[in-house]
Length: 415
Image (tube, rainbow, N blue to C red; front, side, top):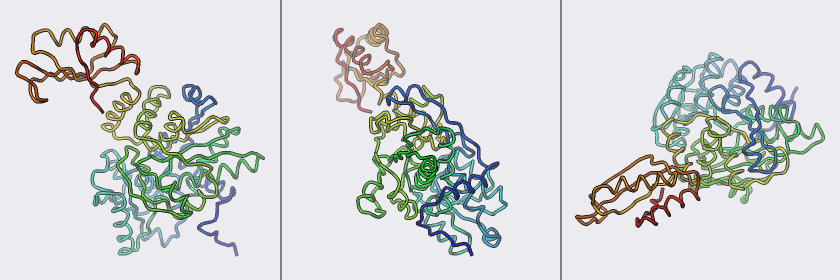
């Protein structure tokens, strides 16, 4: 009789290979491409694993499909239930549709409309309730208890970890000389699976690979958990990287992470926005904030070049309205976009004069607010507020100096 592996045991290379075989024809083989811009920034070769091009737009479909494929006939008949703000929801919905399993997905109120519509489009019944994913997960667990449906946890199950780890096998196959793999950490399912897979495959080839995890500063539960030796729940704060906004790592992935992940670093909101902008401009790819944190760590100097490095772009599901705001924020974080407030005497021609000076400095005026009200203004005064685009911090300062030399007093408005 074959022994059932412990939930906490590190999956073997054979398990990942078998999982990859079972997923062939279901998932897409996503490309791995050289980034010259990031290679220059890091000082060594950077290859981007573009999992943002995966079916459903993220790696989540790997773990969800593998998990559902291993359900018994009796479990499939009972249906499945999951909770997610988007990526896991879409992965479970698609896997359930392909396998003919009824699926119910709990999603929090305020979930991005594209993710909601995509989940419904895969045939799942969506229940919108609760303010957070944690609330949705609790409601999903109650639903499972009440109906007998199988709860498909987003990261805290061995089959999920094994399914996500198939991504690591692709990294090794695409880049056999990889030295470092970088990816985001939420609950830990992806990095646990990838770390186990790449290290096992590299060891079989007589090599070693470094694995680095990245968390948003506003939701960094892994560092205190590693320090405590067990998962710790923290108080999170809002982050644009909502895909990794998790207050407590999963028990199953944590044990693997503690054993195999070499380092965990954190990045700021500005770092993430800057990474999204760099990926748009240089790699010509759209990536969601959680999928860009590996690139953010490189650009922020949190990772140092030690050979061929592969950041995993784990997802591309970003709401267009958020993308618009993030691009503007990324430009500001890069010193290429600034809002300037200028007090002026209320005389004809002042706006034209300011615009002409900025044009002479090569700055592009994007938006203008011209008001005579508020700000403690005297009756003969007004405020001109401009949003300008420049080539970078030095160019912004040149534009401001041009205004100052003409007698104006521009002030940068904090983002």
